[in-house]
Length: 190
Ligand SMILES: C[S@@+](CC[C@H](N)C(=O)[O-])C[C@H]1O[C@@H](n2cnc3c(N)ncnc32)[C@H](O)[C@@H]1O
Image (cartoon, rainbow, N blue to C red; front, side, top):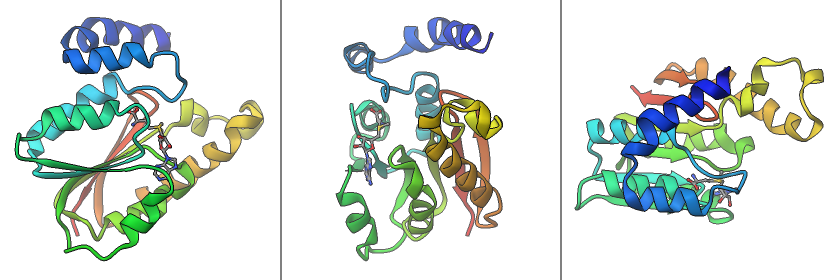
């Protein structure tokens, strides 16, 4: 039922409105298990339009779908800093000139989401958003561990711990949305 509903949304409202470059990229990478956002991407594009950020960050690039979506959506003179793999901790750990970004999309190593969150607190402007992908981890966060395939347990546990910590963070407003693999939208208020 859930998958049928998701396919209905994708076919009716998401894919017909997808910009051509994103459509081509999604089709070219469709068979990869880490590929693309679809319905969550459409929501992210709308949030980007509302926020109109001059500076955005993305952690975890892979096919570049979400990066391309961000680049196509922010103002023409906007800038996206993308960070992939081994460089992320060094780059985010370097002192920067304060809270210069209005949006970050995090879709990288799930065991570091809370570390990213703490560092992003120093980089994202008050009122800015951080969107974390995969926070439902295929719905497994809501299942007893025994019902979850061995291969999914470690990052399920990371998602569960991150969800608890972020939910208790008084510096953000948040909404966890069951689109895609679950996205958590955080708005920094302090
Ligand atoms: C799920 S994919 C990202 C998908 C991407 N958002 C897209 O639209 O195609 C996860 C990516 O995170 C990267 N990654 C893994 N560990 C990372 C780290 N420590 N820092 C930054 N990127 C990392 C992986 O190399 C991979 O490219």
